[in-house]
Length: 124
Image 1: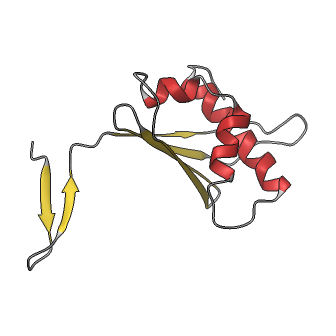
Image 2 (image 1 turned 30 degrees about the horizontal axis):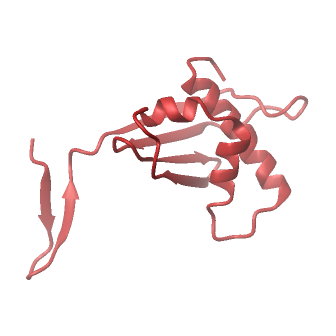
């Protein structure tokens, strides 16, 4: 398998690393906080780079991401499974350029609760 590939002409170019492993899954039927109904499908992408990684979460056209630069020897999945929804929700909601409002923080927390439950091996 080819590790790197340069794209573009001239003296420069963009380096593309084809060995990066991305795990992606979609969660259906996850519920919001009590009496608040169901969430739309949640798409999750995990990019584990060994000791660091990134999560991207998308739900109903909105997306949030967070980078973790030091997760030790755990995989990104293991690290995130050990988090609670307040920590992960805060990382995701506060990583946007727009002002985060309480309603969005609550929404992201509901989403992260479902994501963490799936990462721990449960059903959302």
